[in-house]
Length: 247
Image 1 (tube, one colour):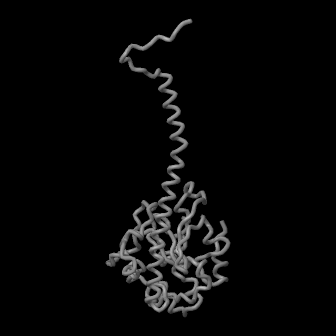
Image 2: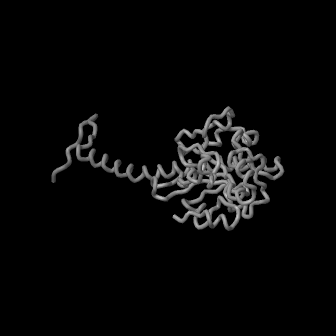
Image 3: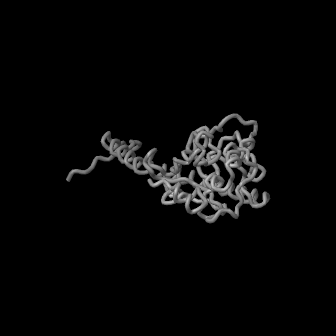
């Protein structure tokens, strides 16, 4: 019976070319299987970090409301919500979602540092309510950013289901979500993305975004859920239905 030849002392075992190719192929297959999972895990981490930022912003909003007779920041252009709320959050880092790699600018020039900071979020303009309740002249002032009063917290009928802050469309400079703004600059298109996290790509209507609600809670909502079958950006039942966007 033939016996396997013994290697000489000091002789190293070596892989054949075929064995090396097989190992490389196995590694490539494993990498192809693991990379999507790692990418999803990384994006999930960004989503959680973003939600934590919004929770901090929600706490800041709560303190602002308590210090301002139960009112939300007014819809003004001389100084906007990032500056109005700055003494409560005091860290520009929480204004940016880690997934937002775009440079988020502002509409027009501003000498207010906080308003000029990069940010990923916009605030509800409440213009459905003010359009229904203000006089024509006051509503014009409101839409021009000169109406001094903010929405009172007690006005909101469904605090846990009414959006205050949302993630804006990447690359846009909106401060307010104003569905009737038109020529004034900000409009509903600012939140049309609705899929900042876990999306399969633009136009796929997948994934979702993070939001702060009127009870100051922060939640992740899947694509379309804030505007279909009702708009959670509105206050009254009639406006919530009238401004819904069926996807």
